Amino acid sequence: DTGVSQDPRHKITKRGQNVTFRCDPISEHNRLYWYRQTLGQGPEFLTYFQNEAQLEKSRLLSDRFSAERPKGSFSTLEIQRTEQGDSAMYLCASSLSGYNYNEQFFGPGTRLTVL
Amino acid sequence: ILNVEQSPQSLHVQEGDSTNFTCSFPSSNFYALHWYRWETAKSPEALFVMTLNGDEKKKGRISATLNTKEGYSYLYIKGSQPEDSATYLCAHNAGGTSYGKLTFGQGTILTVHP
Image (cartoon, rainbow over all chains, first blue to last red; front, side, top):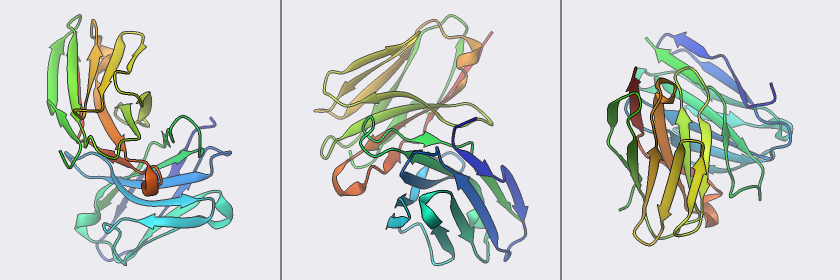
C-alpha cells in the first residue's frame, strides 16, 4: 500500500502521560499536514511541513504539542502532559506541491483517548 | 461567510433516492474547494477538486458544482446505495500564504438504508 500511513491507529492513555504519533506520507510528497478532528466537527489544521521545515503552526497547537519531520520523510506529533481535551482523531495528510491545487491525501488517523 | 459550513449535518435516505448537500465558504481568497468522502475506520478519500466558477465535475453517480462568486458548492448523489453511507466533507483552500492548508466544514453524515 503506497498511501499515507499512521501509527498507532488507536491510543488510550492516562491524563498527564506523553504520547507520540507517527505519519508516513506518500514517498514523493514534499508537504505534510497534521489535522485534529473532535466529535461533531470537521478536521482542524494543526501544522504544516514543506520538506523538513515546519512553516506554519495553528494557535490550536499549544506548547504541549510538538511536531517534527526529520529529513523531510516521516513525521511525528508528540503531546506532552495529555489532557482530556486532547481526546480526538489526529489525521495526517501529504501532498506534492504544484499537483492538482495541492490535493491532499489522508491517512486513516490515530484516535487518541485520554482517561 | 467567514467559515466553511455544511448542511445538512446528517441525512437519512432510502436506497435509490437522490440527495444533495451544500457547502458554503468565504468567496474571497479562493484557490480551490475539495470534497472528501470519509467512511468509518478508513482514510478520507478525495472526490473532487473544484477550482473554477461554474465548474461541474462527475464521478459515477456523484457530481459537484461550484459557485465561487457567491461561495457555495453542491454535491449530488444520484440513486444512493448503502455503500454511499459516509461522512462527506468539503474543505476550502484559500491559497496564497496559507500554504494550501484546508479549512473543513463539519461534514454531512449520510446514511443510506436498504
